[in-house]
Amino acid sequence: MAFFRTLSVADSVPTLVGDGVTLRTPQMGDHQAWSDLRTLSRDFLRPWEPIWPTDDLTRNAFRRRLKRYAREMEQDQAYPFFVFGPDGALVGGVTLSQVRRGVAQACSVGYWMGQPYAGRGLMTAAMRALTPFVFDGLKLRRLEAACLPRNAASIRLLEKIGFEREGCARQYLCIDGIWQDHLLYALLRGPRLV
Image (cartoon, rainbow, N blue to C red):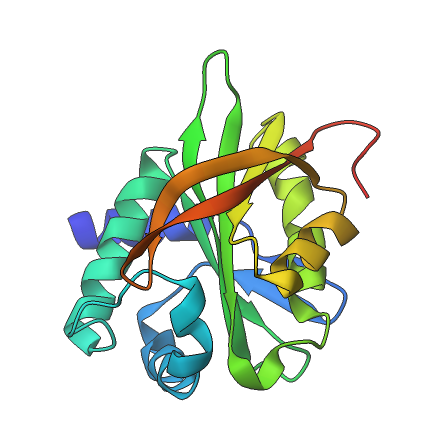
């Protein structure tokens, strides 16, 4: 019974379409493309991500990941998307996490891009496709992002789509095995949305 509930939760999250990109929730059939892209991009992504578990790219780990995603979507805690390019190839991913309701009405966003697709504007298009889902679909008021001060590409992306820098959090996240400072950004619902 839980298997069918998992399918229905993922099916209730819309597929998002942007300028040359499509965003949809991950499915088991995506495992090979995801694993291949992450393997190919490992050295490219390492400076920007937490250390990967040793079994991270296995089919069983991916299955566990999908179960966690389904649970988090069902509980309105997180919404993961894979990003597909104009030719239908998997190019990266973006996740809305730490959804906070009540008086906050906010969430965080994190993203990654496969090395072969970096610098082509695909993540900018993906983030632009995602923001209406955040503000109109989920009815949130604030979208937050954090990035390393040396990640010029991420800073450019966030500022290009209207995020504003709000400060710096010291030793905010453990990235590549080191607790590192992060710049904090936010995009608010309203006229600033680009």
